[in-house]
Image 1 (cartoon, helix red, strand yellow):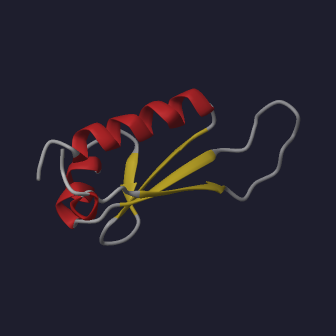
Image 2 (image 1 turned 180 degrees about the vertical axis):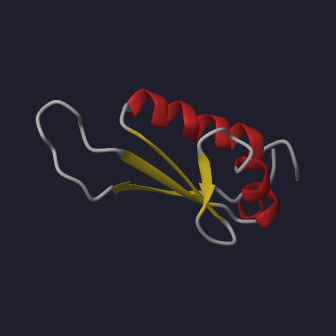
Image 3 (image 1 turned 60 degrees about the vertical axis):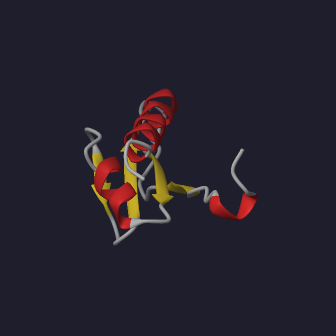
Length: 83
């Protein structure tokens, strides 16, 4: 087991995207992940649909929450490939 101070968890923020809700199509959902290291963001950016918003931050936007969750999991899995 690693000491607690060596483990860094990414900060995740769900942001609403500006737009009108017309009753037929929900507003897009954005998850924005701020990684501890830029190499983690580099790997997470490889996820289809992911966009780099800052040096250590990657965002994923979709209208279906399940797809947003899958994108978030893909970004975390890709970022875990490097140390």
